[in-house]
Amino acid sequence: MKCILLFLSLVCSLSVSAQYCSEVWSPDNGDGTYTNPVINADYSDPDVVAVGDDYYLTASSFNCMPGLPILHSKDLVNWEIIGHALRSQFPDSVRTQHGMGVYAPSIRYHSGEFYIYWGDPDRGIFMVKTKDPAGEWEKPVMVVEGLGYIDTTPLWDEDGRCYLVNGWANSRIGFNGVLTVRELSADGTRAIGEPCIVFDGDATGNVTTEGPKFYKRDGWYWILCPAGGVAGGWQLAMRSKSPYGPYEWKRVLERGKTTMNGPHQGGWIHTKYGEDWFIHFQDKGPYGRVCHLQPVDWSSGWPVIGNAGEPYWKFRKPKSDSKTIVNPVETDEFDSSKLGMQWQWQNDYKESYGQATSMGFFRLFTYALPELGDVSNLWYVPNMLLQKTPADEFTATTKLSFCSRNSDQYVGLVCMSAEYSSVGLQRTEDGYELQIRHNPNAMRTHLTDEVLTVDTLKPTQKGTPRKGRPAEMHIKDVYLRMSIKDSKVNYAYSIDGKKWKKAGGEYAMGKGRWIGSKIGFFAVDPNKTGRKGFIDIDWFRISR
Image (cartoon, rainbow, N blue to C red; front, top):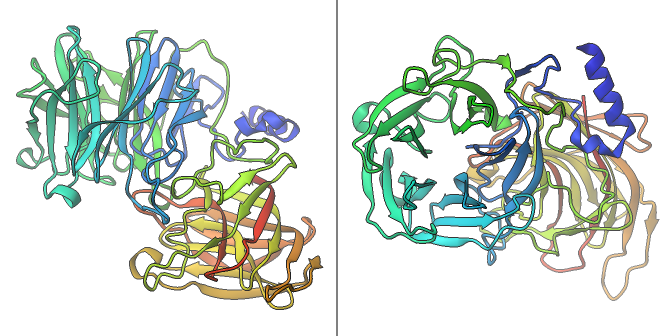
C-alpha cells in the first residue's frame, strides 16, 4: 500500500497531469476496496445517474458560480470534475447571495439527453439539459415559478408521462417536512397537474423530511429521502403503486452504532453489472458535506443500505472494468487559458473580477468593498476565487505578485466562511504590511476584520504619482501558505520560497451558509474610487 501511494505521489510531482492526482486524500485503497468518503470535499446533496458504465454526479452549489458541478466516474469511487451546468443565476447582483440559488439538484438521463432539475427557494423550479454532460448545457428553463420550492426530482414513467417531487423551504413559505408530487408535460418543461402532498414527515416522526429522489422499480414508485436534520438524521425509503401515494415507508440507513453522523440524502444507482449502490453525504461541519458510497440490498423488497442499515467506512469497490485512480482537481499551475474547473466565485462571474492569461498566471483584480450598511469585511465580496477543501488535513501554498494602484488595497490567501482568516499584503505609503486578518462572525454581526501586522516588506518597484493618483507599486514573488488540521488554520509566509516564517496564531475554520469553508484568494479596495490593483497568481499547490 505504501508503495502504491509513493508511486502516485511521484507521478503527481512529475507530471502536469498531476491535476488529477491527490496527495492528501484517495478513497481507492488499491486492493479492490475503498474507504469513505469517496469524495472528501463539499459536494452537498449529491445525486448520480448511470449511463452504461459511466456515472455522472451533480450537487448543490447554492450561490457559488459556476454552479451545478458535473463529476464523472467509471467505478463510483474515483471521480473527476468535467464541467458545470450553470453559468449564471444572479446577473444583476453586485454582492454575494449567500445561501441562495441551487438547492439539492437531481440528474437524470432520458431519451438521449441529460437533465438536471433544482429548486431555487426564491424563484421556483428550474431545469437544464444537454446531450454532452462535459460540454455546454442549454439555458435554464423555469418549470414552476414561485417561492419555497427546493429539492426536486423528475420521473418519466413507462407511458411517457412525467412526474415531479419536491420539498419545501420553511424560511420562504412557512412550512416544510412535506413532500409534493405533480405532473409535468411529457418534455418536462412545465407543470400540467396540481400539486399533491404525498408524505407528511412531521406526522410520522420524520421531522425535516426533504431532499426526495424519485424512482420506479418492479412496478413500485419509490421516493428516497432524508429526515431528521442534516447532522443527525437518517434515510427513508417509501413506496406506492401510484405516484400520488399513499406511500408506506421505512428507515433504511441510520448512524446506529457507527461514528458516522447523518448518513443520508443522495442517490440510488443500479449499475450495468447488476449491482445497487447509494451515494450520500455526511456533514463534517467546517469541511462541508462530503460524499460516501454504500451498497444497497433489495432482497427484502426494500432498499436496505450499508451493513443492514448502518453505514460502512470501508467496503469492496463496485464491479468495474476501470483501473484508473483519479480525484477532483486541486492544484493549479495556472498554465491554461481557461480557469481550472475546481474554482468558483461567490457570485456570477464578471470579467472585471479576474482573467486567465497566456503568461502562466491568473490575474485577480481588486474589488471595491460593497456598500451595505456597516459591512466592511469580505462577506459580501463577489470576486473571491475559491475552491472546496480537499481533505481533513492539508497544506495550500501559493506564489503571487501584487500591483497596487490605490491606497490601502489588500490581497491574499484566505480560508473563507462566516468565520474567516487570511494571510496577505496591504499597501502602505512606503511599502506593504504582511498581515493576518481574522473575522470571527462576519455573517451575523458584520464585524470589521481583526488585523495583525506580522512584517513590513519593501516594494520591488514604485512609480511616480500622477494627477493626484497614488503611485503604482509592485511587489514580486511573495509566497503564502495555509496549513489545515483538526478544523484549525495556521499561516506562514516566505520571500524566497525556502525559508518560512509563521504568521499569527491558530484560527478556527467556520461554516458558510449551507456550505463549509472554502480556500483561495481575495483582492479588495476599501476606496470608493481609483484604479484597480491586481494580483498575479503564479501557482496554487495542495500537499500534505
